[in-house]
Image 1 (cartoon, rainbow, N blue to C red):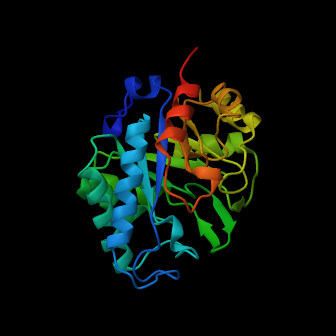
Image 2: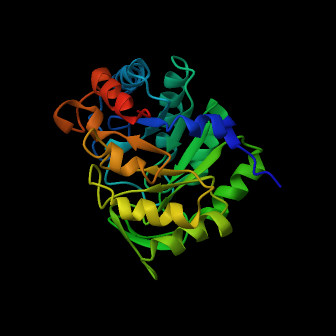
Length: 272
């Protein structure tokens, strides 16, 4: 049986070795870093970053509540749902690129719901199988919730799952191949994400190679530390990359996205 390409992310999409650019939302209303300024600044930055990503040649865009840290563990408050929905709709209105949603730290039910309502194509789940010790405490895998939510809503949304996610320590086993197989063969993830220890940290090419070796038919994405210097070595074992930090001036994650940095990195990713 041929596996369904949720969100229309079929072989043609993966053949591009896609660059998925991050839109890091400014602190949302009600979050710990909320300044009380309201949504207008959040929306303006989100739209500008999305436009820069598209202008630079990104193949898809992922939106997340990056600056809401410290994050809710597994269920965000209603105001965050409302704010993220509004932000996703603002980005959706100005681009036809595939769009993704990540509700930090691990609210996959909200992410799939927002994606379904707003016409996004994929979601990211940080802790998908097993359990991890994180700065939010112990977070348990959400694979069952993700798959059942998608079925309940009849949502055409792909599920991208982290394997041994960054800013966390996997409990039970740190054998990345076993976690990867559980995520796909038991958890039914559509694609996997392999990262370094933290935001912007280099992903070990050996980790990507290990995951790809046991799941050669599953798309594998690099989730951190992907830049001009590392692109070639990481893409030797991966199908694309999710990039945020290196697309910003001086690798300063607080800065707006640079279209020129996107363009340079995208060019480096193309086959030579």
